[in-house]
Length: 400
Image (cartoon, rainbow, N blue to C red; front, side, top):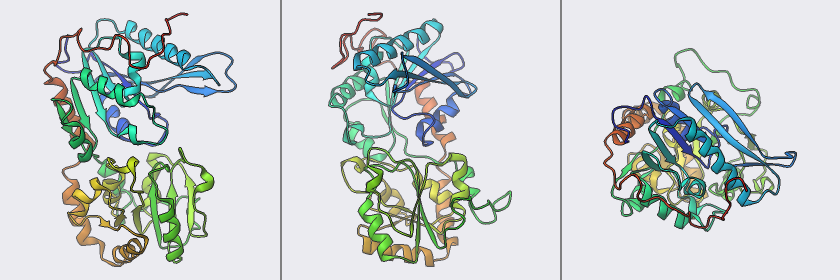
């Protein structure tokens, strides 16, 4: 059975390295649209809880047809136990939906370790990051991605750099760069419908002008650049929103004009941005940022903010080339670029940004993805191309 005549009876199993209750990113945008016509299970990686005496499953329903399933394991539980728990969960969910068209949608190849032995009607690899380049990446990622590329019916990529890297590895690869919910972020603009948004309490006392960033604070952030900018421009206040991951919070630069305000809800971002004077994207240039296509780029523009970024390839083209984002490679150049964008009238740049953003929306992205799903021609027969024994998978029999 293939998914061909619509998605109404389909069940999507999304295997994600990102948690639903984290920063609102590509998976959330896509699956909040898929769930309007299909059943979605969002299968998270295990959580290890020192207070858990035995394994359990946490289940939440953030949207009507999205069920988030999270294994919770005792601290120190073995990899074998984690994989067994995930295999059992997946087997149980599939048994509940026997006879329905099943779509496996992978954000992480690591999920093959517990899912590869199950057939599905359609296999999607939505490659939003080059996970192998991230700090602490498993050595298994490379062979598992090779296996996933053999299994996948269709591959989507989250940016042009990723597209160029993957298009040689699979015959059915499609570019779907970061899109934007323009209406959501347009609420930050002066004169937006509904009136001005109140300055959030934890930001209210910060002087102006403010330059803001939002996103995960990890090895992709150039902390030295942030520190240098703060020293060079004591007249500017740098507001940083987002959770700290994979780096020591003690390593974040501290200064009177750097403000680490923590993670915020997606719904609250426009209120913060409404009271910023510019956005900045101080990304490091390293292996982890080589293939990124930051979703925040069009979100800043939709909010009506001028933006300065380090020369990340998928920001330089198209945003730098179209003169929508100022590009600066050094702290000195970055400070000068901030001066320029803060001084220039917003109207001309905003008109260009709006014209560009008219071609970007998550609704449009999902509509085109959906079309690709419904037109997929099988690369293999239903029983072919699946791993009998996933690469690197420990032998843990179910129920042992």
